[in-house]
Length: 191
Image 1 (cartoon, rainbow, N blue to C red):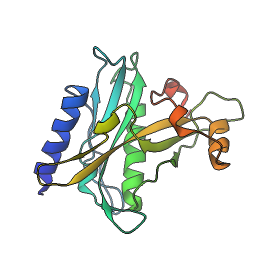
Image 2: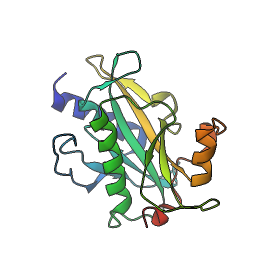
Image 3: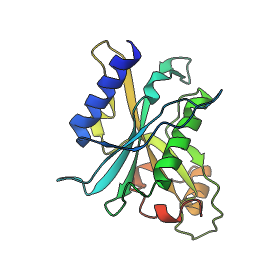
């Protein structure tokens, strides 16, 4: 499948399940390990969904290596509350950088993989310490789809983790299915 066909298929899948999105952050300038042109789009709240969903378009162009050596392709989503406005670029920038870091690593994210930010947090803090990467629950059965050419694309969400939740995760005691997908305290991220 050529890149423009893959982008169109991904955009159509997101539009079908999230509604039409708007560009909220242009593709960052790439480098040796950072993918170029990974724009971030936002789907505003709508009937049936009371939050914003940021999404990548183009992450699936990069083939990542799975645990057993298989090739896997991903697009990423991050959800923000309904009071977020696109002129507040910080969460979109952080989402873009986290997605780019995963792609630059070249390895498929495992369910429960963690992308850290540099916030100084302490026990009991509601601040987002890291993002846990897992198949998107809000997409349900549509979190993985095949394009017309048969290419499998998986949609993974970045869910917020506090420091305490991260510690539970490290000890294998966190049920990732209980984590919210909407990042309510995003304004406290990366203070």
